[in-house]
Length: 253
Image 1 (cartoon, helix red, strand yellow):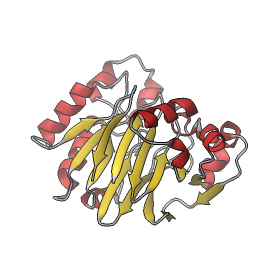
Image 2 (cartoon, helix red, strand yellow; image 1 turned 90 degrees about the vertical axis):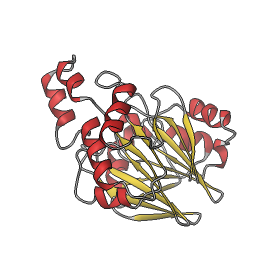
Image 3 (cartoon, helix red, strand yellow; image 1 turned 180 degrees about the vertical axis):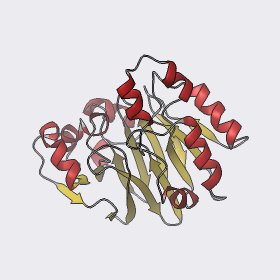
Image 4 (tube, helix red, strand yellow; image 1 turned 45 degrees about the vertical axis):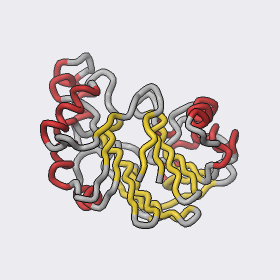
């Protein structure tokens, strides 16, 4: 299995996974041509992608879903709520597969487990992709550390894990109080400390690497996020940060 974060953050999210000849895109926060070009620079052809799977309706995850679907003929997968909320943004679509949050999808022999998250999107979900004995988690926009997340983490061989904000930077930063409260709240994002704590408690012996994802540009810094995780749990462990501006990877399982 190969995974590439094409971009991660509130300016746009998209993750590419290739396993057993099946090629998937998760989320569509990048323009169509930019998504194509980033894949091409890694020797991948967007026209061979088998499915585009959307986690929730927020613009940084869904705004280019319709464009990718129409430009490159990629079948679109999303929950009923995500499709309904995103309809004006997505526009005309023809090859659509709606699913229930919590449903396990099958694309070309790959299993994609979907897990409802308490993030404040419409039927927001996170994903685990299974190919043979390898399991990859794409776990961002989590809201808070919810029941069941621990068991998912313990089962993974590789993970993109949300590490959105540093508590001190958020507290002292320029965001208005309501937005700060939303980010910290049960439907927002998890912090560096929260991410590191759940990884320390739950990451299993089979885990080969972790990539910190969906870092805030204003309320976080890659060096701070890495330092927090290394202090709490990841000394000497293969740990990376997904860029907000370019592709990161590839990562192998």
